[in-house]
Image (cartoon, rainbow, N blue to C red):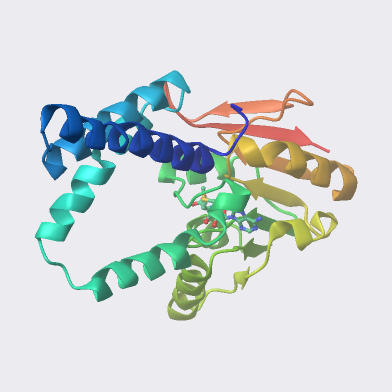
Length: 252
Ligand SMILES: C[S@@+](CC[C@H](N)C(=O)[O-])C[C@H]1O[C@@H](n2cnc3c(N)ncnc32)[C@H](O)[C@@H]1O
């Protein structure tokens, strides 16, 4: 049960909480002639959902999200927001988060400290090919390209909006970084000397298998924040005292 994706867990939690809150209402009306107000039902549904979320040991930010879900819908209804706004917001989210429900890797960006630390791992004098798997808005290859003129930089991104933004940025910057709109599982990692990934724990087992199958001996596999269980890293670069992020490096 706990291995279901958190989005599916949340859907189940919301449905169960809805049933548990909606079903007693007719009984209250029948036996006590009491009809609870809609906002009261929404708060009750949110409380039940938040408790279920805790019981299911979802990450800490989920119970408040569950609690607020229906109350926020009620509030939005009262604000009479035109339906087109919801459609627009939904489409925007789809374009940015695309198949996150499948890949379980959302868009969030690495910071300058991570990019700086990466520079210490790349070859200083010889030519090399570098790829960022899930390149987001392109920040990592853009940063490195300026510091390693002998490198060839690539990024691959599955979501249309970040990919388009990185292409436009490359055009404005007159950058030579090549951004592909492709699932990295369809890319041959053997074509690169350095493979960088900042994904999620869920993506790491399959990616590690792909790296082992395809990467050439001596090439570098670098993961920001997420380790692989199968093999301890050859090098660990902590970005700062107590920092949340760490670079894990494997020499293949
Ligand atoms: C955490 S972000 C990292 C962005 C960027 N690399 C950085 O460091 O700022 C991960 C990105 O990987 C993308 N992604 C997830 N699965 C992917 C896949 N199978 N192929 C290509 N991109 C993927 C997501 O859309 C998201 O933009």
